[in-house]
Each structure stands twice: as C-alpha cells, then as structure tokens.
Image 1 (cartoon, rainbow, N blue to C red):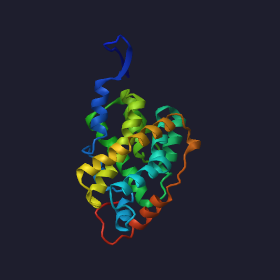
Image 2 (tube, rainbow, N blue to C red):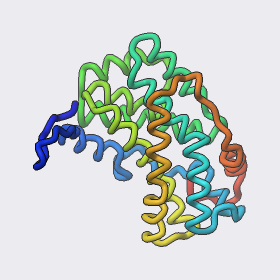
Image 3 (cartoon, rainbow, N blue to C red):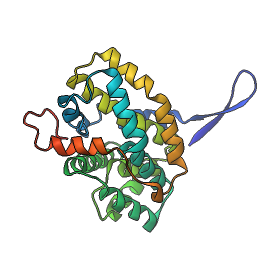
Image 4 (tube, rainbow, N blue to C red):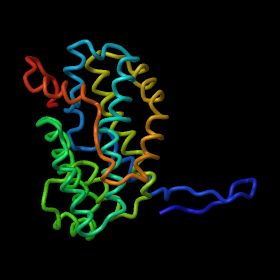
Amino acid sequence: MTIMLRNTAGNTVMTTDPRQLLRLQSWLSPAFPIGAFSYSHGLEYAVEAGLVHDKDSLIAWLEADLRHGSGRNEGIFLATALKSDGDAFLEIAELAAASFSTQELALEGLSQGEAFLHMLQKAWPHGDLSALAHELTVRPALPIAVAMASKAHGIDPVAALHLHLQAWLANLINAAVRLVPLGQTDGQLAQAALEDAVLAVAAEAATATIDDLGSAAIMVDWASMQHETQYTRLFRS
C-alpha cells in the first residue's frame, strides 16, 4: 500500500506505508533469524583463490553476479511471484526451487526461504500466508518466501523488490568484510557503489517474465562448486 501526500510545493507524492517499511526492515535485516550470516554464496572460495581480495574486486564480483547471475534471477523470481496467483504462482515457486546451479546454493536459498516463512508465521501470522504455504508443493526459495509474505501483508511490491536485492547484497558484503578481510568503511563504500546496479536490476526484473531467467555468472557457480571441497571453511556455501 502507498500513501498519497503533498509536499511544501503542493505537488502530490507517494510514499510507502510506514508499517510496511517497518516490516520490510525487520524481515530483510541481517539480524532476521534465517541463518543468512552462515552463507557466502561461493565468496569464501573466491577469496581463498585470490579472485576477491579488496573493495574494488568485491564490487566487480558482486555487480557481475547481481546484473548477470543469481542476483538478477532472485529479482525476477520475486517480481513475477508478486504478480502471480494460483497455478502460475506455484509454477514460479517450483522453478525457483529447481533453479540452483550447485548443491550449496540450493541449501542456501531453500534453507533461508523455509526459515523466513517459519519466522513470519510466528511473529506476523496471517491467514493468507498460511494458505499460500499450505498450497506449496516444494520448499520455498527465499524470493518466493518474501513474495508470499509481501502478498499476504499488502507490502508495496516496488519496495519489496528493491529492498530484497539490497539485502541480498548486504549479506554478501558482510561475508566479505569477515573473509578478505575488509573494514566496515570499505563494506559501506561497496554497498554505496552498487546502488545503481540494484536500481537497474530491479527495473529490469519488474517487467521481466520467467522466460527472461538465466545466468552468465559462471565464475560464481564455479566458486560455489569448489567451496564444497574447500579444506577450511567458515561458511556453509
């Protein structure tokens, strides 16, 4: 839901309902208990291999994944799920559950999706959310779970899409801060540098269909595969 307001110049502007913003901030916070802190999306191996070693290489790695890899697909899954109902929604959920290129990325996406739904049903219970969860025939990937919660609670889909992509990046930046290691300042500089990529991917995803899904971030998939046999690991992916 959006609220219509007038600014000091008398122009009509739109703003997201403050309650929606509070909920999105809670749901997409790194502190939300879905275990996001334990996944690196292959970054742990990329750091060990020297592919990511400073702020600039981290920005390049994440921007490639966001614009051309799983970040873009996350946005498309969320945007299309938000616009779909019934069998069409269930088809998107099934495709999302089967879309992961490696075992560890599947663990990352599906485990977080299940934990997200579980916590939502405890802290923000809603009949529509329970009904959607009952209809699922597969484990929900995280963007599917976010779409379900947003639909049930009437969250502005534009805000949900942008903030989900921002949170996706923030979790990986937090992982890199620990792994490289980077300072907190460099982590925030990386987040700021990727704002344009978030806006561009969100705009593309908003008008995309499931036919637009695909990935060219081959190095991310390769790093994830190598992580499965990495000798010393802090992260589960």
